[in-house]
Amino acid sequence: MDKPILIKFLFENKKSLISYEVIVKNGSIEYVHQGPKVKIDPSQLQITVTANDINILNSYQIRKRSDMEVVLEFIKEEYPTNAVIVNRSFNSMCNEWIAHNNLYKLHIARSRTKDVDLNYPQPWYLNLAYFLLSIITL
Image (cartoon, rainbow, N blue to C red; front, side):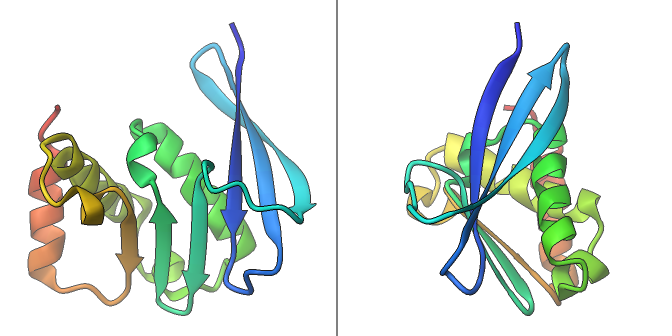
């Protein structure tokens, strides 16, 4: 059965909210751009993009790597020259996101691990830590 999911993106100007409807069909994701919205629904995924940071609120709600990649693809479409998008691989960003999710599941610093901040530049030791934490399946 097809399952529509509404994802709303709050971008840096904080005046427009862009929402997408994500439709899951036979295990693969398709999406449709829905355009600007005026009302912000805090229960939906909100993303703030700045020059060298992508903040995804309540990111723990997205658990599959393939869904994370869809969200990152949305961001790439809206901000193709963003430093994080240009300089980090989707794999690196997904590893960080999964590491946050795993820490959240383990009830470690939940107020901080419920969201993910994808930054550039990032120290090598954080990349290593995120990689190690992302290979654990919880």
